[in-house]
Length: 168
Figure (cartoon, helix red, strand yellow):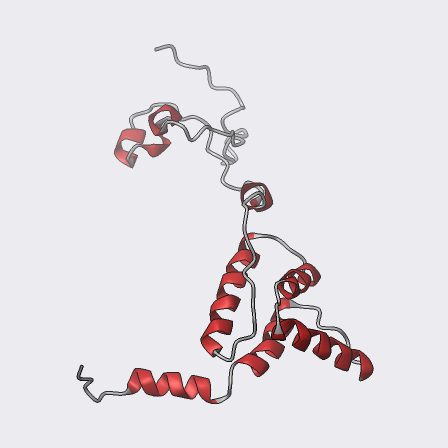
């Protein structure tokens, strides 16, 4: 196998900078070269291909994922709210939405009582000259106060720490 001449493409004149990365197909692991071989095989003096780029734009990778925002009906069950928040949070972590868009998207999925309640919250804030709810975090705080009673956390803790045996 002919060896390539060493020019300045591989290292920037000994300054330790790696060569620029190149995109590789993920179709065939073996076709991607020795970067997947254990270190002892890489040290045999074989030339390695340029490193793979792992810093792709997250929006390029995740932005095209399809998703359905879950509906929230405002049941009196705190677990329904907490479950809804977890699902919506997962969607928001994957997509790079602005805070205003997060609030708008979440509120679009309110149905029944929750929709009426949300409109009243916004009217009241407007009437009291308060800033509108502008972040997902602030929205969660307001919703948590309404849909998760104060005793819920205590009740969960008591269930978890109850050491009495259960018989069925």
